[in-house]
Length: 114
Length: 115
Image 1 (cartoon, each protein chain N blue to C red):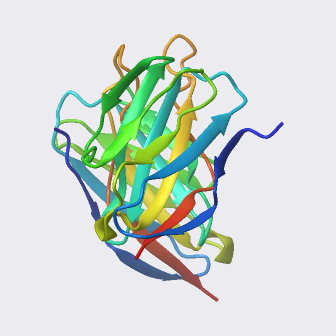
Image 2: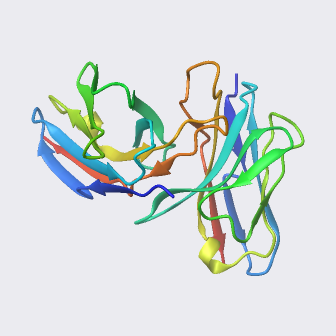
Image 3: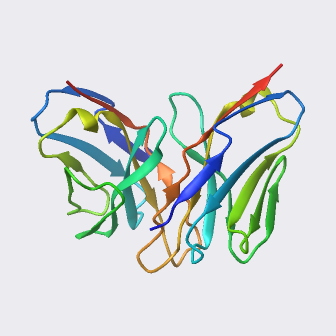
């Protein structure tokens, strides 16, 4: 089955700096790569996703890049703000007739310091 | 518009007891999922369902049973709870194929402690 590795496990940045979180996946057939943000005590929420036919996707301060050859994808957050502090999870799946079974990474605790 | 809800939100039970966690969604989403979240493991898929009466195992199904008689409900049962099943359980739903929307919407979670 799919295996997703995520690094780093913790990341501390100064407000206004950029943050980068990296993930690798094992199954070359995977074609959908979402990123979820989870604030303390809250539910995970999708912040951005990318399909395998796209190399990069941006949404305001957030961007995701995908390298299918190397089987890795990254989350980039620019101009970080205190409200970006949370745990971020990457995930991978193969979208088929059976749906969208996500395999998650182990998470990155991002702390944005003032 | 309640979206997706879980009950109970907190549960303490004893080893060997049967426990059922409830999940209800109001969107008529086809797909529903159960995950457990443990420190150091992220979110792991327990079971999922593509439609009423269609369920399948995920990554960590042992010790769990699911059913889906109605589209909106997807209960998860621990037949004989063990301490290793102490965790936070999240239910999720998604529209699935045909819409192009693959986002999974998570419920608020149930914190289960097995003593």
